[in-house]
Length: 476
Image (cartoon, rainbow, N blue to C red; front, side, top):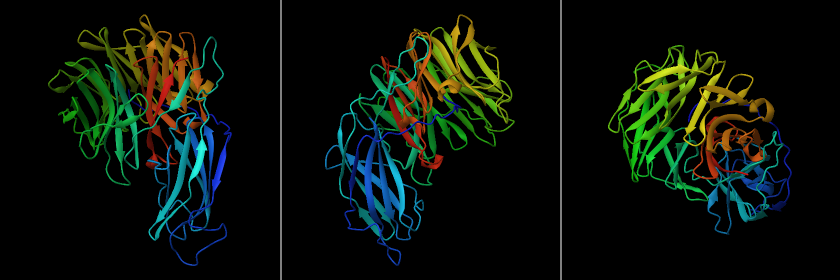
């Protein structure tokens, strides 16, 4: 899966169901001000539970004239153990400043403790312990489409050692699910991020050690063999996981001045995989890039793309492969571009229309789906026979801009995207748009069972402070 989806946001009211407040542990008062710069002071801190998996800590902090970082430490015991990403230095004014920190990935029906830590170059301050409880239900009510039933979304904990980053791809095989992405610290270079699903949360997993590389997609044709693709600086990047060890694979990267990228990968077997992306990105010279893995080497497939094109997704099953993207895609949105592998030849086929296809997902049980977007709408298209048919315009209807899609069966699919997810029951799409996903984009979905896993990125005010996020999508 790959690509950048487009969608609309729908505002949701936040209802605080419980509030707890503590005074600052350092004894600061709401009116206290230092005459000179010094350590910060936490003037007040309270927490409100806004969703079964989310809480918001409201704060008033006196930075005492210095750029100040603020984090919230939290957990189910007094030992805490989890920490939110720090606020960026300089975001607090040189006067007492009210603001908030959101805690995501909480468990429903659970009691938590939390404390606030503010730090600047002169020292730090710590609040007393806050205690709060999340409600039991994780269902987000929506307005069902015709014949549809509402699914549920639950944000789950993500291991995020960096100060910023994201998860872009997820794949499952033989009961094991891995997610890939990137992470970084401050303004330093990115590096690959890999996490493993435990059944209740994501935990750290060995990742390629290439500094500067980012992983965008993952495919696992065997339980002990996975391929990850992405970019390393201005070049495409590929790595192979054998057991728990990664090895970087040489992958052809056309020497272009604006960089090359592989956004998606899919395998029929350990000796037959395809990766899709583009070269000279975001320029008029941009061209789709399609590469093949034969179990030993990667090679560029010449003639499989069109000039001024981009490829965002590829998906393969035993019956064949599909790759999707757009043509004339810069600086305009262009037209949909879809190719089908017939024998050993890639053949351009439907659908037609304006926009860019973001991803494609094919399975032996559920057929093929693709997500597409343009300036005013988004769509999910299903391959029926030899024709692609639009099944919904969810961007206009729900505020969810679909980016990725995966299916359990012909009667159960999930599409993740900007601000939520959509569930397909075989008749219609139903949007699930809880408030805690309003700043999230779900970039990839995998359905190893009736429970699907979605991974993506939460934007915490700006792209430079984005963090990995993940959710469980439960079929009704």
